[in-house]
Image (tube, rainbow, N blue to C red; front, side, top):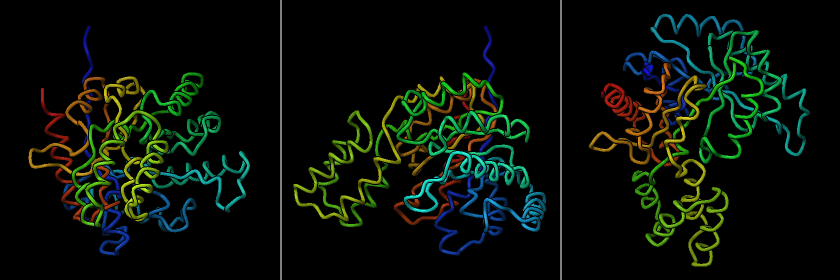
Length: 332
């Protein structure tokens, strides 16, 4: 029996450079130029609502300019990230048919801009995915569910989509793994940033005790809030450390092997690469070979999420992450 080894290419998501963008150090075109200049492409993922004015509608001039710029810089559109906004107006959920058309508009935007993959999230219900699959096939587009923390391959949320995927059996449906759901530990950079915000050691010790426990993220976060409040910790400190329950979860990374066959793109979630060239929280040395040796060929975009709690040069962070990924993928 032979195993087909996949070819995985490093790439970037503009989400990684969120702080550079919202601080107006870089505009949209500037980010693309800097990604190209630093060799962090050629693949580029874009978050529609973050980067494109008027999204999900894309005017002809913007689409033409985007395609021209991508060609000029030698970049390649990989994935367009979309939203499922059932509650555009608070307390007034839209009907399923309206939500379906909202997704179709975003799908048409992806095709107009030249993206072959659309990243969707758990807010898009499985029943809607079943309906959208034929439309995606007609457009020549793939829909990828971002398997984001706290979810993992065996999480009930993911199992519901796995069932639909098996029933529909459409070539348009796939996975976009996000490694935050299979972290090994909390990032040192997060703990350091918490201390810099004045979070006391007692609260950090409580976080380190509760975060690895089994159970749903909201339950463990609630447990931390209850104990921390009882112990007299400040609400702003409790809020600051509670974030991590919803962006990182401790689960067995080997479970990704069950999703490799339908994986169409990868979110290389990371928080920092240490002096030894290893990610602070996530065991990339175990995870990446699962996809490579499982036959996945495609892109992994460097998704630095440390910008949620610290200020640093995202381009430098992405460079370190891509170097780490290439080291692991090139190893025998």
